[in-house]
Image 1: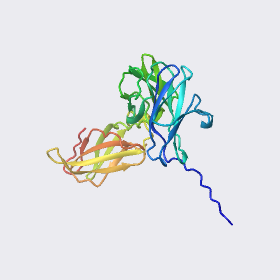
Image 2 (image 1 turned 60 degrees about the horizontal axis):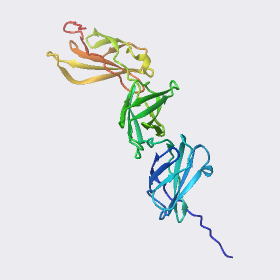
Image 3 (image 1 turned 180 degrees about the vertical axis):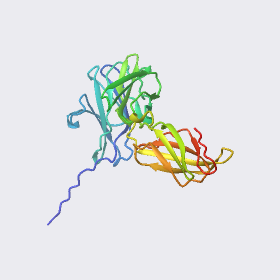
Image 4 (image 1 turned 180 degrees about the horizontal axis):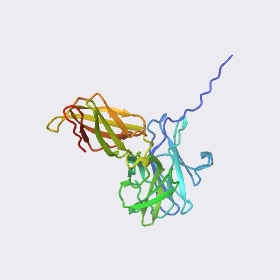
Length: 314
């Protein structure tokens, strides 16, 4: 009995990288890329896939073979049309995986797609953006078109910015996911946009509690009272409060480390601090707590426990 083993060709381990596109005219684009980082054998050529409807299976896309090199042009395209481009490397073991899709619009002299778009939330209402200029400019970039939408209003916004590669997007909603993309433009028009990136803005932390007051209850206890922060409704529900208390000496300096008490009920607006020293002055601060973290502490209030003469300072 003879056993016959059939070995199927193994695909290349990685796809072509850093695919860049540029519209040379209303019906011609140039495409450039870097070889796969980890090809499964020696690369002997490439196949460029292009289509105006990127949701179709790649078997239905048009293709162009490239025997050598990492640059090619595609002609006879439809003017004023956005094409999606993907590339495969060919080795002795077959075609490897497809590169990430990039888009290009057939226009006279428009810039190619910007790359490396990054978005980082730096506050509850602000996102910092950064990207790389198009590698193939076509014509000089005169600015960028910035687009974004959010999951709160489901509304798309748009802003024209100068020919820079970083921007701070402000006046956003806190704790909200945004989709952001950017396109370069020349005097001939706007090029293809980057793929959208997602970023979530930070949550607001609560402001300081209001109307904080202190009064002595006994020689070893003080009562602190407060009202919720003014921006309470902008946050996740307040989970409770933190109370920080610290002893003060005769020169009004702080003594030792502060002691922290946790109030786990959001509806509580008063707390008795016990276990204190008689006839001693203390400074107290209150902060609201949400799931995001601890908010701003209130301005210190001071009071003296009873014992050697009762004194209250507001």
